[in-house]
Length: 384
Image 1 (cartoon, one colour):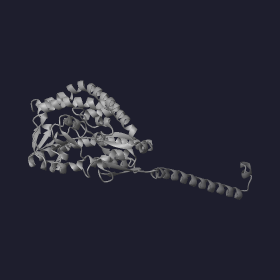
Image 2 (cartoon, rainbow, N blue to C red):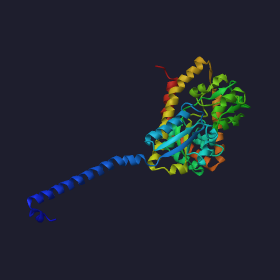
Image 3 (cartoon, helix red, strand yellow):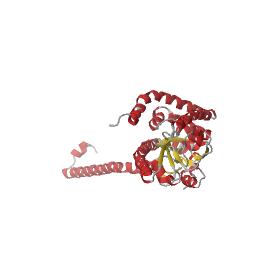
Image 4 (tube, rainbow, N blue to C red):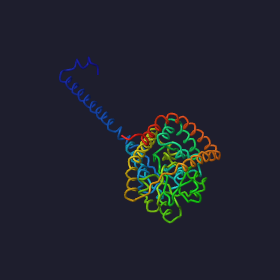
């Protein structure tokens, strides 16, 4: 209907047309408003109800073990929180779903989507992995994190794990560990001859070169083996965990420093197929949660080890002893030999070892005038 035809209508008919037009506009407005409201409400609702991911995670750690097992559980909670529930990870302690030392294989084969442990546990399968956990007389926590995040270490680690369908991330650090628990005093490196000791990784190969018999045991098996004389000595982590494990009831002497593990990195590993199938934001959330847990765990170790050491010495009368300088000097020489020997056995290990040495040299000059100079003053300078 044209405007002219409307103007020529009688007034009563014109009023009817105007009323119809107003009703139509109201209806259109109501429908439009409803459409906008529906879009605003349903968009986040649709997003929240989109695809969710339910993963399983296995670890090498005993149930409820502070920082190590509880750190993995914290990691899973953070992933769920940051993803607004789109990703949930059920965590199983060592032995609950797979054997503790079966973690790497379970992730590699896709039996589970992720796992947590320490890279040196897989030395028999992946020799180069040892450099990504702890190197005797190697990196402290600050140095190894610098290597991973800023020095190309993480990319090298990914390259080493890629043939096994595994993606690694740093997920924690123990700090400088203790030297271990012994049932005889250590006065020279010769005291390690014939000694049965639980010690993993490259450190284990060093003491083996000194004549010790190395036994690799999961955490839950150590105390009983020490108590029954299956082993004569063990290293584990540090005062907090050693106190909890009760080693003071099964060994007489507690030695320091942990020359074999000066800043042990803990790992979270993902099945590559499962990781690659995730949307980019969930990959970023996994990476961020791992990095956060890495920092959190080191802070926890630093915060809680001192109090636990006081308990061991003052309440349980543990005899705290320092390795003699001659022992540390001999082990440092043996460590250099072991690193070269192990690197020659495997092309990937050789590549990693060369990268490790180059980065250590790069950090060395700065460390002497920063960390070392400061710590030397704190240890030997005048006390305020």
